[in-house]
Image (cartoon, rainbow, N blue to C red; front, side, top):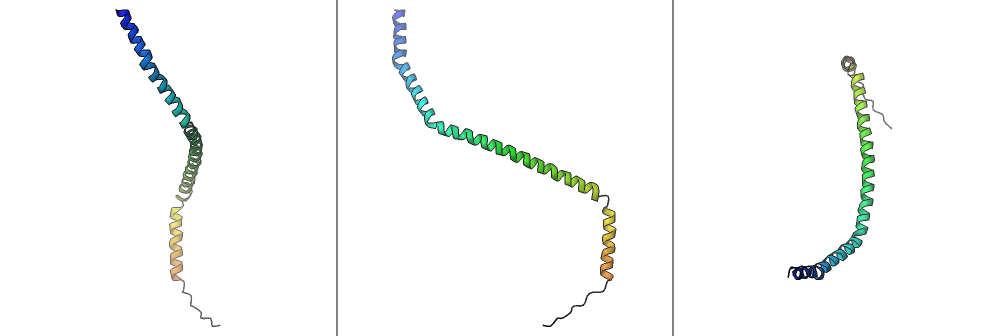
Amino acid sequence: MIASLLFLALFFGMVVVLPILVVSLVFRVALGVLLLPFHLLGAVLRVFFGLAGGLFRLFFGAAGLLAFAVAALFFLVFLPLLPFFIIVGGIWLVARAVRPARTARVVAF
């Protein structure tokens, strides 16, 4: 009795479940073949944009480092000279204010 029930369960599994598994496998393969160009395109775009992003990261990283170096050089060189610039600028403003204004010439053709 148990053997016949076991045989019936195996027969049911072979008749019902096995075709469902085969149909599922066929659908998966068909869908995979149908979507294969999109997977390939996605892989190509991922590689392209990955390389482009790496190059942009390298370029802007170098640009930021260069900007930092220029700013540091500017502050290291010109910050100690700032009092002299202020004094010379004040003298120039006073000299410019004391100088007589130019008169405008009227040129007739």
